[in-house]
Length: 355
Ligand code: PHE
Image (cartoon, rainbow, N blue to C red; front, side, top):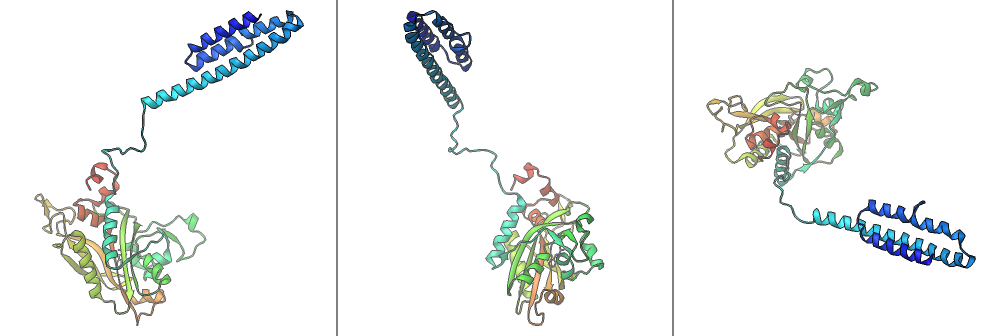
């Protein structure tokens, strides 16, 4: 009997040496330790032995079972680690190493332009503010001197938030997607100490027919300066300086009288078209960016209307201010020579990667 056990052990060890897959290991385990395995067969024979032999053989058989079990576990661990070593060697990845990819990410031209503008304004002492894109009617219209039912509201084709959400709200409280960044003027004047000198870059929404210069959401940059003795001359100097800094010294800036309910007097500001250098013609065709005029309208501006100051609790006999709102998309199109600002929203890498 003892010999049988010895033989079994030798056979087992020899078989184990040749094994290198988990499946073969499982088979070996069944062959020796399974219900119908070789060790079990020996144990069945124990009952026919003498009491003395039963003791020694029984103990020896149990020891053998334990040694098989631990040898199998050891082999399993070896197989597993060999498996991972092979993977490591085959797919060696050093996650700490630098990788010179051809497709490095970069800023979208609109983010890039926003940051350029922020840098210029910050250098002139402006602070950057932010405001909600879902606005209420009071901030987007009423406090900007655009009352309910006033025809001026038609200028800002509005996406209203659906009636379900709005149903308990009264006039002035109804919600909308802000049509311009001007409501942040109101929020700032109502919450901050004078003097105020801020810019507000951000996304705005209009229910528009889309063409080369119009998209139903776009980016604006609002500016507001309020304090004692602020004049229209300050407004002109600021915008002239910023546009020349942004688009080049040769850029011409012109002011045209205009009307906005929240500024008085108001002016629209054009710059000489960068696409056709102000000539109105590009490749012998009418320039599509400026419709052949040589000028591109980039801004609305003016002196803050005294009524708006008063709505915000500011004494309009003591303080004055100027405000402006520019289209970041159009500025980006001008700066990068892109003929349609709608292209910025088409997510074509071929376009975006050029900047
Ligand atoms: N909010 C105006 C618009 O969206 C622009 C503007 C801002 C005009 C500030 C004057 C002063 O058209």
